Image 1 (cartoon, rainbow, N blue to C red):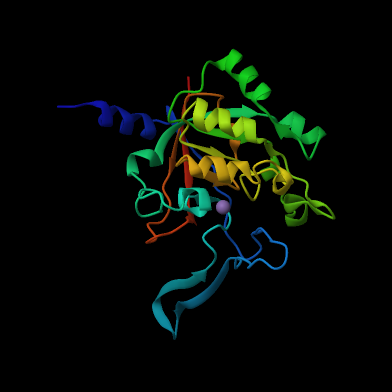
Image 2 (image 1 turned 180 degrees about the vertical axis):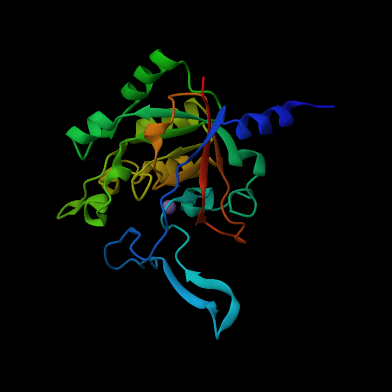
Amino acid sequence: MPSLLAEFAAAIASRRIEVVDLTQTLHPGTPVIGLPSPFAQTKPFAIEEISRYDARGPAWYWNNFSCGEHTGTHFDAPIHWITGKDLADGATDTIPVQRLIAPACVIDVSREAAEDERFILTPRHILAWEREHGLIPKGSWVLMRTDWSKRTDPERFLNMKADGPHVPGPNADAIRLLAAGRDVNGWGVEAVGTDHGQAFSFEPAFPAHALMHGANKFGLASLSNLDKLPPTGAVIVAAPLKIRGGSGSPLRVLALVERG
Ligand code: MN
């Protein structure tokens, strides 16, 4: 009898493997990205009670909810960007499910982000991380810890200024190194989107979208609790809703962390 899964289940039950929730709670106040005119806007999260043990349904409680695909803690599928639009396995319903469970490398730049709201992650930071923790393995999630999720005030979280959002993020060379050089599974952040706040002015614009998705890699945005993860060794379970032709979806992101 194979024993791997039995050992795994026992380790979860005994908390030798801890399950860490990397998800923000969805509610009508969940901040969503706002695009400049003339671009179309996403709907925020909305919830409407159908019945709650009352005349509308005496023994049951349920709600309708609505939101854009890119609301709260959410998954960016490769077809989200024009560079990934023709990928046959790039939509929420066509992604190979094996890729929805993958190890994580966590790059902690929380100190840099606290000092500079427009901190730019470059290959230098990635190579410094690798000197300490080893080469980023192929097929890994790379998660950038900024502690941005601790900004519980939506205005501070979006941090919109006259010249656009002041939000840390990667430059194009960092994304090239991860996508082409390390063949990662995807790129995840704590902020509302995977790109730097000023990435509209980068070359190419929005590299975490343009280069990652063009290389058939995924994105995760609005993650939390990255401070509870080790630099290496955690395993991420991130499965978007199976929306036909979907460009992404809100989801529950779980990290499995082995406690020594
Ligand atoms: Mn998104």
